[in-house]
Image (cartoon, rainbow, N blue to C red; front, top):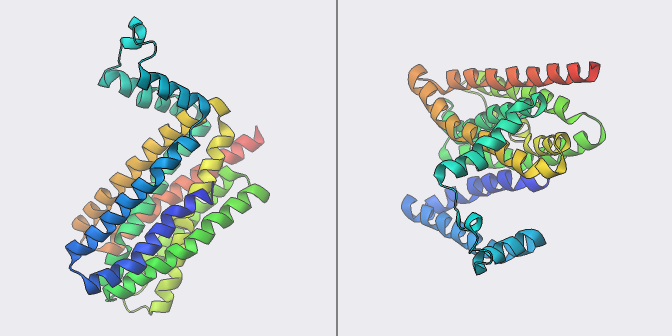
Length: 288
């Protein structure tokens, strides 16, 4: 799971390294078109592999539906409406996940951790440019370097969860560590040298971006095999809520306070409290 999840920080690192070069050679609109073309090419490239990844049962079901087999039966003709789809695909899985204390704790943690991760990735360059006076190229380079380090962090945390630590307890420790790292980043003086800021951004990336693999492994460990897909989908619904809402909330905090530093300090509280909650829950489970 940790290796699978390295795609995100590798992508961010690639953008941080390549986009400044594109902006130096092309207008910003043309640079975005290059990125859009790369996304479209990836979509086309992964299409043929989809059927190889589907299970035989899923392929048979898809083929039967495409061929209209069984379409004469009233039950087969009935198509759920939007409300039915929301109930079956969103509400019911969420109810299952939130109805169990262990998976509920993980789901809420994923929301907070994703909020922290997206806020860090989205506004790090702005913090370095506006409040530390770094050039855009240098700020993007620090972001890129931190994401390259976070790839090793994701794999390292996954290995640690496999060999030495309970995954839930490790997630809790990561929450506390990411809160501390974000706080130190926010408290760095405005004239801090690039070397210090690189160390702080790497510390943030290893923790703030390094939690995903351990999270998925812990979730799969806690639910029966037949519920893995539903549980993963439900928790990812909350994860992406945190990611989407994170940028808006952080931008609002910057607008209200007038400071990226203040917003990052407020952000640091959320993963810290979440991590402490996970640690307390894992201790209670171990005692029980």
